[in-house]
Image 1 (cartoon, helix red, strand yellow):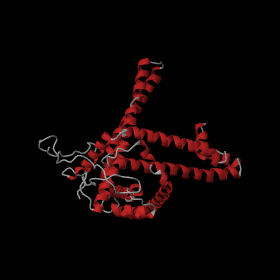
Image 2 (cartoon, one colour):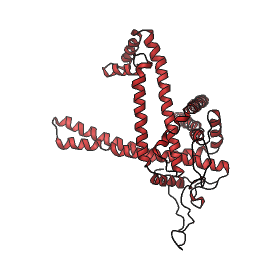
Image 3 (tube, one colour):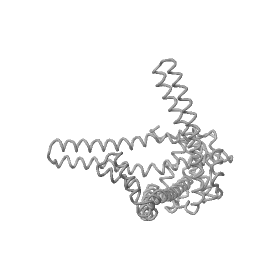
Image 4 (cartoon, helix red, strand yellow):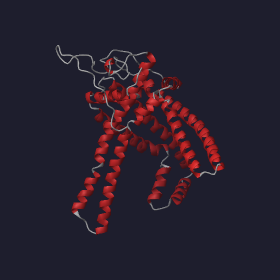
Length: 380
């Protein structure tokens, strides 16, 4: 079954346009809720779990802000914790670890829920805002699955890292024996690229775990094994799909840097002039507004990227189960199932499908319009 990345992304954008409330508003609410609860966990449970001793990182940051160098600040932070007695040390280490686990559990569960929202969105089910909380009833399965996935990623990363280190040493020794600095640099670049490629391969093998957890009811080792099975031979397509969004991220970084540079340049001009210029102050404020389009773009990009990965899961699932081609199942199809409705923990049902049938007419007796060739984003 042919994979059409351009059509998949076009279908996701159409889904975003048709979904109400708009995915940008849902993403904004999602971000606010996650940040607010994270702040509450840190504030309410942080002092309780650490026995009132506070966070070591907060203590270290305090001394850095007081003007101490990094080494001195670290030494004073350690002495400060020791001076509070064994209870404080125990609270900071054990309580801090428990706090980190709670925060990770909350954020992981919500991220899985957002993946479920994106999956429902690309299935044209018009998901409500509450859909982002769909993983909370499965918080135990989320914790176990994410933990096992993390262990597999770490173990595979260690293996790839050891192989990379041995290969890099051998290549450098070979280049040194040939007495060529150019070869040494070339071999180092190649080894770094190989390590980067290995890390991507390891991560993308488990890219479908969250969708399998919600959509198929799999968890733990079952979800990990099924993700590896489904991603076999498809890692490259998933990587190219994610890479196709690189231009958007580059654009956001460019806007942020341009706004920051403009602000710093105007500030330096103010300092150099030695007087406050109202026009320059206004220009500085305008330069700071450059961060506003970045925030808006990020609210649009998050559901777009999440929806694309959810659509990729649909294509993989259809290929594994012998499903038909994607939206409309015609010449424009990108390879996803044609009709279904999703509920957490299940994969069957009836629905309205992924989009219009390209073979249908646009009115009484009118001939069907020829299918348009989809175009990818101009950011590849």
